[in-house]
Length: 194
Image (cartoon, rainbow, N blue to C red):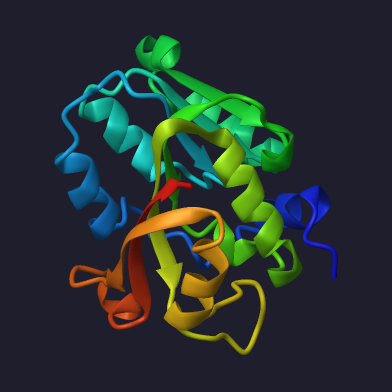
């Protein structure tokens, strides 16, 4: 199975989006709530329905970029996001690996787990390239395995080995505020590039 544009487009067309929480993930919401600089450049790759982006807009953030492969999803996002906020948010229909801008903050929310594990090193390299010198990669990783993929899971030990080559891991710990179905299976991560 190729996890390509057609695959993700079909998932959205069929409304087969079991990963969609219908809200901002509580650990990410809590992180956003403590950010003070509303002008930082923020990327949300594999943004899905972009609840995090809507929340960032509500909180006054003004430099948000979303990227996703699904044209149907991107079209919906562009029509759903408040028109008066359009100058504060950019929605890209495309491949994360083709981006070439620098960001102060990249939010990881079910993007890493949607990629085939063979792309994990490439993910780290690209994330490092996209982060500004003092930028941060922050978000959630699954600390469990799955029978059906995607999502692709993993373990804290595996992630530490992978990410420590490219990043200074500031935090990688079990979430205390996950939604009920994900209790005990998410790690909150915060990293800066080496």
